[in-house]
Amino acid sequence: MTTPLLDQILYNPKTLSVRFQPIFRISSDVHQIVSLEGLIRGPARTHFERADILFDYVRRKHAETAVDRSCIAAISKVVADLPPDLHINLNVHASTLGQNPQFVDFFRHQMQNLCLDLDRFTLEIVEHSPAYNVPGLTCNLRALRDLGVRIALDDVGLGSSNYRMILDCHPDFFKLDAFFVEGVSRDRERRAVVKSIMCMAEEMKATVVAEGVHSGEDMWVLTEMGIELFQAHILCPPLLPREVRAKGFLPVQNAGRELLRQTPSLVSRCAPRGADSLSMKQSV
Image (cartoon, rainbow, N blue to C red; front, side, top):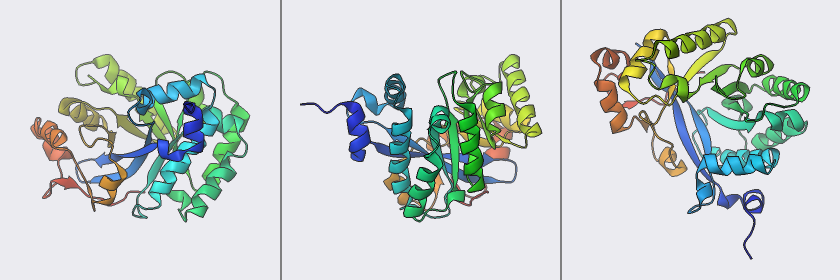
């Protein structure tokens, strides 16, 4: 008899596989990796190996809380084997934080049992439902911050990651959705949206992360606008844990280096000096 997918995820953690994608700081005088985002893939050789299909299924089953815990447990076990100076981003649904008053205790115990410092972690808040328990969410966020955990808001500008969510979460990082990043070099209205988000972040003492940059031209424009943090396949795709462990650094992919070279002014601003890779020096 076939085991239901949810049972596989919740009771057999080996069905989940972990990837890490770096977040880069790129500016005129600094080129470094500031964090790794832990990502989950579903059972291999199934449609659910794709994260978007997997989590769409989870949401339709209203199983966000249980699956968020399973994903955090799976990623944190891998993190325990990584260098201790790596900062890690983890995803969690706003509904999980809003409806689960035990989440903070779970998170603290999970990390303490693995001897992982809590201040290494940033929780990225994702939400695809317009309704969530605001008092429960804000209470859990306050407790997480007291532990040294930082908060990021994912997909800013789309769906439920709107002004209300920004005020409720007061994030340390605004992760600008790729929809507003792609084509920003050619689209004045997209640049206006990016500027408005940057202005909000500055007023709230937060930092903007640009996700999903696809071209050197877009990266050049974003750096000229003042964005320094980037997460994109052209810089580095998600890596298997063994690839992270095997390297003392994480290389910028060849395709990413080539895109950075396409614009001379972008090269002088973004290209690492005297090396083919970005350093693993941490920025906290």
